[in-house]
Amino acid sequence: MKYSYAELAKMIDHSLLHPTMTDQDLEDGCRLAARYQVASVCIKPYAVKRAAELLQGTGVLVGAVIGFPHGNSTSESKRYETELACADGAAEIDMVINIGKALGGDWAYVEADVRIVCDEAHRHGAKVKVIFENDYLTKGGAGLGSDDFKRKLCVLCERAGADWVKTSTGYGFVKQPDGSYNYKGATEHDLALMRAAVSSRVQVKAAGGVRDLDGLIRVRDLGGSRCGATATAVMMDEYRRREAAEAAGGVEEKISGQLGAGGY
Image (tube, rainbow, N blue to C red; front, top):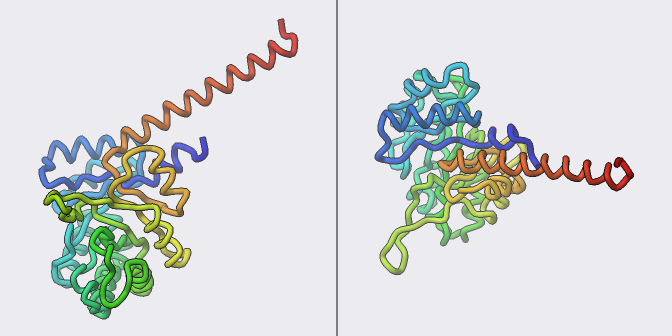
């Protein structure tokens, strides 16, 4: 295999964010995350304390979303959410930018909004992932084309203290011509763009649309260090299946070589 089990599992932030999630879903999800030894669970703020209890001693971190999913909370609300989440045991914070302010070109507001969360999180020893919601940015904004707009956000977030820049929430649904709603989430183009737009100090996280092992591997190939996922079991079970098949193939090749060398 190109990467080890641990290298790929520790890329996964197991997502427990669906609006209908129950307390039992949370507990089941945390146990799954511990079983597969992923990097973290990414959960709603009210659930942080319980998740921290469930995951204590497992090596799996607790991450909380802030201003989720649309980024419309006031900056002070985001800061206070961050304070509470960290006090409850969150080691990572996934915050959403104020998308409308960014599209309108109020860059000072956006930077201050990111900075206040980063400063609060870092005060508690937590790290911050800043979510752009790229599905809403396909036409750019503030006089910039889409790619230049995303590059500017990357630079701004690094300056404000972000530890990761992140593509999406997984809930950035855009109305389609037929009236339905859908989203792409992380794309290869955006991952490569974002990786190139920040220094090595800042990492890149993919979210939305990565649903199988090959997709996870591709995120790593493109320089992403984390990936939000609900399909954790599917991905890592497939890894074990391929690993076993590769090992079996190696044994067969060795036996075949022995036979060819006159072993019998």
